Image (cartoon, rainbow, N blue to C red):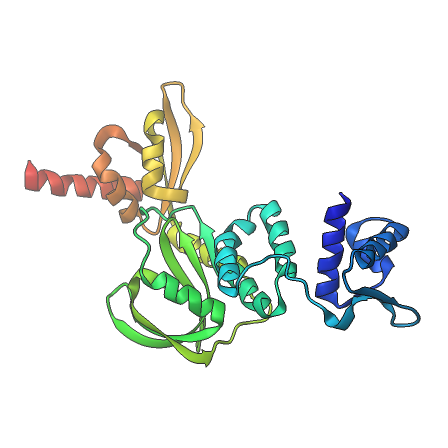
Length: 313
């Protein structure tokens, strides 16, 4: 529609400062005469668009004029981009809409809105544990990412040992309601579970962030590293097909269907860091599951069964 093209042309003029009719035609995928008529229509509608001939010429907005087509305040723009940003990574239409809206924002809003759009990634695949309530610190850390400020935090690791760190917050990831902070430290990129952060203070010191950093790509690398550590041992098990969903809720992405059997059971491959870990997860299933192998997992199940038998008869 022509109205869409006129708005797009105006946004491009705002973003680029100056455009030739040929450049606009290439951007809008129309002919050069059509692009020129669109620019003339903007000028005729009272928008301060003018052309300059000669080398370095083209069309531009008079005096660098700006038109805020969004009507959003800075705070509203940030909130909108924080909400829509995660979806934009998987929905092309939302990504396209956000690019257009970003161009429509005044320059003073644009930088923080763009940071907000890339501040959060949502990874819906769980790591074998149920989601939990959103930590109170998520909003504070998210604001630090958007504003680009260093954060001083106290962190309790898996062994409950506490350390104090000054980090550059690069982004947050919601993995099935378990939140992670991806940040830069003096030892390079690190990932922190937000529910293990004891407290955090946003400083006035500007955070450093790699120019080519993409949160979704950084998180994909984190997931690959974790998956390798969590998949050192695999086991083949047989289970009633009706119970497969329950088993998947326990093992997450480490439960993969191999084949279906004629007796209503399915063959599934499970993975975990150790044979003991797989056995401990399966012990509660009793005879409902049959472990085909490896022998290390079968031996661990036997050991656990013997311990339970000795204690409970």
